Amino acid sequence: MKKIITYGTFDLLHTGHLNILKLAKEYGDYLIVAVSTDEFNELKGKKAYYTYEQRRAILEAVRYVDKVIPEENWEQKISDIISYKIDVFVMGEDWRGNFDFLKQYCEVVYLPRTVGILTTQIKKDLGRTNKWLEKLQ
Image (cartoon, rainbow, N blue to C red):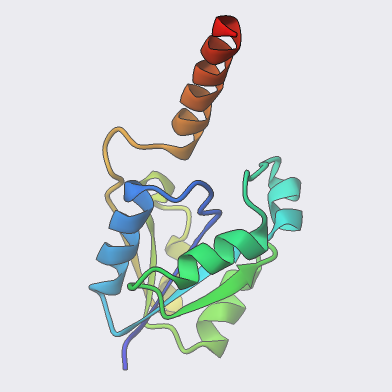
């Protein structure tokens, strides 16, 4: 069985997330998704709308995902690759080169992002919509 792993916050799940999960799954038989915990997001200076448990539950319902694990720190990738016997590490192309050091443990693949879809942009757009609705009231 060929195992794949990817990492991310996966907040406000959208078609860009689904595309990368689908493409990742095409590299093997079993896809593990490591989801950033709320505590790890705080260390990264990120704030997710959904809690870790909610994001985990959403990803567990996605048909391409076989297992969801917590991402608690930057350093765990090597130990995850070893302990889960990972064959392919997958990330979006915006991370190109950042994880090449993992090539000594498994294949490293950078997948194209879905053009025009970013969680940060969705959050900005929602903020603008909320401000516009407040003015109408």
